[in-house]
Amino acid sequence: MPRKRKADIPILAEHFLKLYAREHNKNVHALTQEALDILVKYSFPGNVREMSNIIEQAVVLTRDETITLLDLPIRVSKDIEDKGEDPLKLEDKLTEIEKKSLWNALGETKGNKSAASRLLGISEHKVRYLIKKYGEKAN
Image 1 (tube, rainbow, N blue to C red):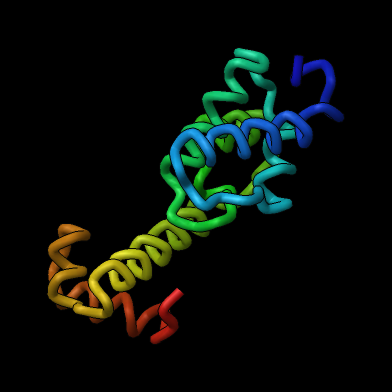
Image 2 (image 1 turned 135 degrees about the vertical axis):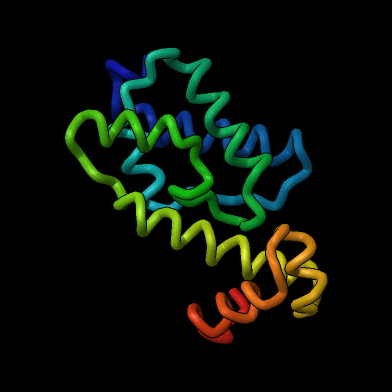
């Protein structure tokens, strides 16, 4: 259904978002416009069932209140890239994932770089390097 009725995608996405946020007891309220745009461009080979699975996975995995492009399964972006569109360059995407992981780990460890390094599975030196690279901003 989403494949043929692109106008229904935002409505269905919102429905599944509310359903799975409630079901998984997560404080997730919205999708970014970028994430929604990608969903509208996605081919949905599994139709509504696939959309349901994509939104549930994003709700479960996100640590934010808003689902971003980075929270969507890689196959969604890959499908768009295969069509010749580039939703976000791979390098930019990896940088965003790295930043988000760093800030989440530092948030969970209340800024403890040593604990964050253990959580991320990298050296404390690397954590300090990434903080310097991305700035002191904590989210």
